[in-house]
Image (cartoon, rainbow, N blue to C red; front, side, top):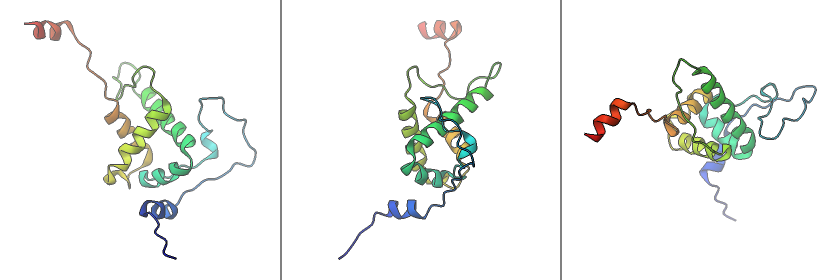
Length: 141
């Protein structure tokens, strides 16, 4: 028999992933919250993260949300936010878009996972400049 494995499946199978369990299981997170950071070591490189997410999408979705939250907290006033999620944005959709962004940019695959996720969020969800009265007046002329 001649088996043909997709190259992507082989890459995923070869990607080293580090997951460790803590001695005592922490209480389950509430709905919509990520897994406790102390229980999982995420892959350090973005390419490995892609492979890990093929099997652990919900964990990755929560991790991406955590990176976005940290990025938002870092941009607390007086700093301007680096990315702006649209109202009613779905965490699952955002995670899929971030993973696709990383997948389509092989140059990011060896970069740190956290920084690559932050770069993806900034690129996918740019903040629109607020209209000032001066800009509005110029546009009307």
